[in-house]
Image (cartoon, rainbow, N blue to C red; front, side, top):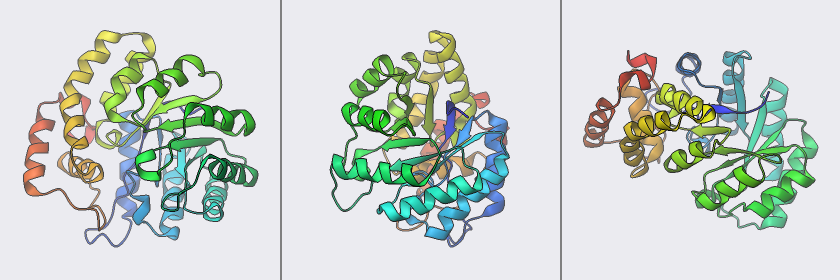
Length: 301
């Protein structure tokens, strides 16, 4: 299964006290995402709050999403960890339960360089057969996976077929899409760069806003691939204020607040991530009200 189109960086629904994964809500969210037009899901990623999940919770999260999709959408399981040992364990499990591919953020906290990052990807590749998506998010990991490094990865580790780039580096995006699309598939992970990515016909995107706005993203992707630039710009102008709002605060908190406002039960973010305040929710509600309802999740209609 080739990863392309709209991939939802699916949130992790919690019970009201934040203590447990709400499995029923997660299954419902997968079903709604499929109905809304997503092409795949990325469980246990940044928007899924992987950093506050236990090892067992991360395993269970992938199991549920794979089971619920039942082959109707791709599952790109995030299996990155602070140690190669744990990343291998997560990746083997993802393969065993039927994930389509794995996404690997590089280890964080303890600084590493390109040599260590390469060994990390190579170690996981040796332990699994799944396609690998490198995850470039330097603000969180401390290491920017530049064009040269990504090309080295895909040329020397054939399983590395994708990159989810959340670096907000428009030059890197342009270079990868225009000059190296035959070597590595670019998945845009930066909301604010969605318009240029669409204009360059990026093959796919991984977005947290897909949890509640997949119809808009599906329309944007289809228009992009068909060369309908006018539709791309028209839809983008509608959703841009929302993207700016979410980007100005705690992104995960905002995505979950939007889900709840639109009828998707996902529960709170887990501490120490702060919840959206009532004032923030009021502003968010007003911004959502300005968007054509057909661009938002069917759960709100």
